[in-house]
Image (tube, rainbow over all chains, first blue to last red; front, side):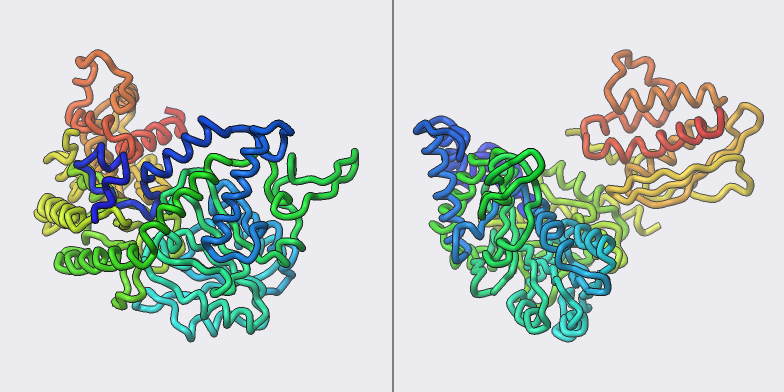
Length: 405
Length: 142
């Protein structure tokens, strides 16, 4: 099955092998059409006007919320809060839940493989409250061991922040087990599902996650929209994060009462077009089916793992356990800076990311400054992998004689 | 797009003879690109108004390292006034602010970096050394 044909940008740019879906995916035509259709036919400020166009816009916005809730199996639509991106969702949790519930000498536990967005806010909360920020470190297989998890999460732990899939290593963390253990110790768990929801079914009730965040643009949806899922009983007790229009009930000169969920956390005019787009992206995923997506990607990643492992000039940073590895592969050509590798691959139309991937503590822990990263999606093919491999050989050939000196 | 990775850039970027320590230096300055980890330190030895010798240490991509090394070759033996003029011209070349190609002649080998202006993502790599040298002169009242 050729999924490239669903994506106008990939149809128009046939020479490109897009291997940076971990940063942002491309969007299929059906998503772009739905967004355009909304602006062409239904655009008005939701929750404001009494006229029918605004009512229509409000209805579409709230129906999309229901659709998104159903997609991750949330119990109630108001457990879905819209934000600007996953980073903002995590900041909301840190500010509104973290600052109010973490006390001096409490512990916040996160993994060393967290994206800065699930790390820097917790540093802030720890500093403000006098709590300790502890890390769960990876083992030599680039995984979190059960012992490490159980050593770090203690009775003092109030919050555990964990990425479902590492955006650098592709390691799939057993978040269900981590949540179970953290709950036993009395901590709540924040799951960053940004890298997992494009590839696997997320069921927030099955995971029993307290909070779970992701962004629309990594799952075929538009840029500028983040999702925060939170258990209703927890969200209800939290203070608002951003204040302003539409999140209030009554405003007096010196005092305000706040609107109920979900509006309490959605100040100002919201990204309705984006929400409609995400809803369409979820339709697209469901039409293909996660089972299919997993099957196709598993074969593709398996092929990429094998082909890249054949290049003896590469250092690969991935778990040997195929089953625990998702659609991200980090690597380096020994002695060549990743930016040079990425620039040279770009000359051949291969788009990969190079740098620290917003995970500086992880790279430092691994003794690295930066890596090359290829990340895959449903529209990638074995030809894309071949082009990457050919490109890497070419880069190595160019640098080889300088490396031997 | 033209391939920027030619002989000059590869030679200077991977194994530069300018990557060393001066026995004695008058000024030194550190330059850093936090986003990519490029990190260089430039050393300068003056003889009156003339840049008698320069060297650098540090690490980074081939473009940042070669740009530093080539800059050193070009500025060595020049007066401070000449060096400032060359630095200004180099920065303008990368930013595509120069229309008269003849002006680029004073850049000597550094003209090899002209095509970096077609690679916006790498501009900061090429400019790191030149901005660092600019800072070094400014900070030391030159």
